[in-house]
Length: 86
Image (tube, rainbow, N blue to C red):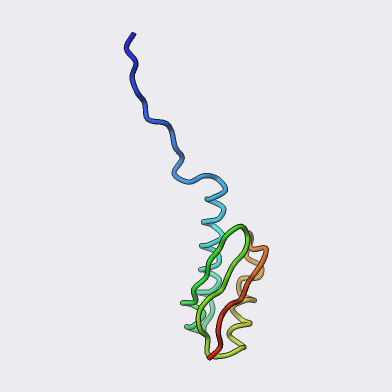
């Protein structure tokens, strides 16, 4: 008998990661739907249900609006708003 090596079947993305990718896409979409340009380009990180907002915004109103825009995104359990107002 001749042994043949077959490559292991590796999924492109694990199921938990797919959910994370959907959450990231939903966060991006929620921010991009805002009519204020600074929110549309705001930087964020997402890991384990926690979103960390980062960047500079021109007002406290926009800082709060960024947080509210993503509050109800499925998969988001916690928001750490580290944006700076200048």
